[in-house]
Length: 162
Image (cartoon, rainbow, N blue to C red; front, side):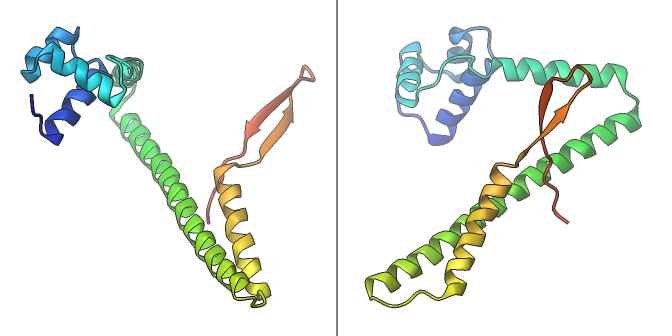
């Protein structure tokens, strides 16, 4: 059966999320045969219900918030989650941009080396700085704390941009 890209992606997303009790329910809803489903599963390398634990956790969290928190607390939680996701997205963009800068500088340096030209100190410094920024953002240094029982706990330091 020929499937559009959109329909194929919907089927795969529903299957991974475990939206239906079983594969038969999924196939009936999307009007495909089980054979088509198994071909999709084999071709795209996913398993039925592989994200079901995430769905269960999200549902439980949502229910907990709905039952135990006031309207103001719910809104504050939503804002805090959005802010955290925004910071994470900004970090990813910074990493991508710095990688692009580092690769560009690296290609310029490679061309200069190929033409037997001398490197300028600022080029090397820029490349090094970009790479160090990537490392700092991608892998923040752990902070080691000592608790009351003299056991070490490792806590990741939150990276904040001002």
